[in-house]
Length: 284
Length: 297
Image 1 (tube, helix red, strand yellow):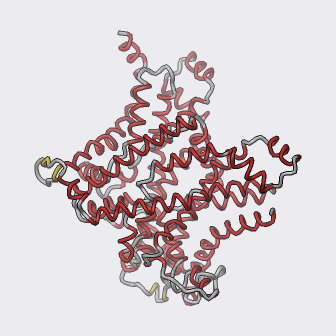
Image 2: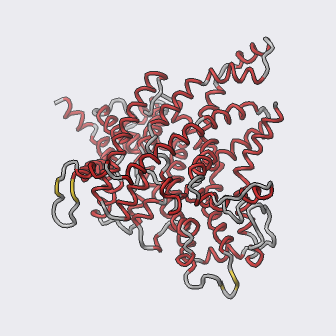
Image 3: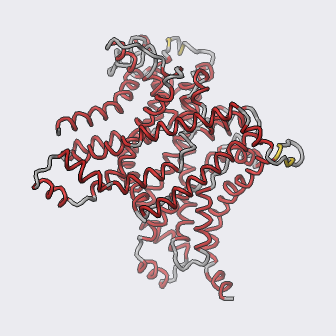
């Protein structure tokens, strides 16, 4: 029984890992040998970083990577600022109108605006083809706001009281007491928002037609899912500096590039995100 | 007067609340009010014209819409029936692992796909299921089974949705069950052990009954999102060959609205979905609160 469970769980982990290892192996194979690689190969036939050299010199892919980093960083910072400000206010019990604000937030939570009215609004605001729409979009998530509120409520009241007696106003208490004492909460929410921005593709696809502003996910979609080699690699489809390229290897490499930043953050994700998600579901 | 005094005293608080609230008004309230477009005809110049329920009448007599509705229900139901038990089973099995490092390894790996975008996952699965080079067909071929082009097969695409959804979510979704299992009192298991119960008997007669509350909550709350059927997944995995069996409400709204520019008609379709969604979410929230004390908020 025990052995069976261990073997089964180990197979589950292989089902997750092997497809990724296969893509990594394909992307690290010399393009001249890449056609010999198939879905079962887990090791490069002839090791080479050439595929990544091509990808990172590609205007759309390197540009997309930079765009994604920028949008994720700026978006997450704005999200955190707005969310913590709102959470600071509604975490206070002495705040007049709290019930009304919470009711409003729950209405927001239940009523999702439809795609078309949002599209027309973005158009009217003149935000089409701007980074602004990608940074502003989903600026605050109501669930996350409630989670942040609980982190703030965990800060002992005596500390806030002490700060107030020392003459600190709300802005000071927020910036110099609440935020430093809620680092775990901020890390959790930062990861929630960061992963959301990094993985966002749909709004970027609709609102951004200028390819130079595409985030990586949109480039990836165009390349791997829509198989649009011409857009991604331009006129020199089969050649790079006189060497033949391999599309399977390039696609595999693009997928890997989109995953790597998440893997770098994964230890932190496991530490904070999982805990935060569990508390979000379990508390209350 | 008292109110005014408090407002004056706490004006900083209201000032801090202003930017987030302004954000909600602009990006949520205005587009929600914009849903009235469902009862209008869109005009590029000048005001839109009220047309009553015209778009809904067209919608409900349109075979394309009814087909989309059917697909949504079928795909959602398949995912729910087949996908729902998997994380429960996974949590029970993970809980049986006592070796700390192996347990941590399993958890870290099975949570991972939850953090990948559906664009990435669709890319991985398109490669995995490729008829000529994909691992699945290579293995099938090796075993003497027929090879299939799953992504373009109308008989298989919905199964691809179900299996890839499990691949992505089962690990992550097991967290909540694992938390419930870990809060079961060890005394129960010890008592059972003394009475001569096997491990399997303990699982069935102690673990399962103890987490039934959590199972019911999660099931009810999932029902609230029934009409969504997983837009990002379907949108990235669907292609023209399978559109008749794969197209769901949200992909339909996107296509007729954004691609074809039928703004008002598309808004009617999304309002229909939205209203059912709200009824389901409110219904499931209050049912869950009543039965288990836990809701969406």
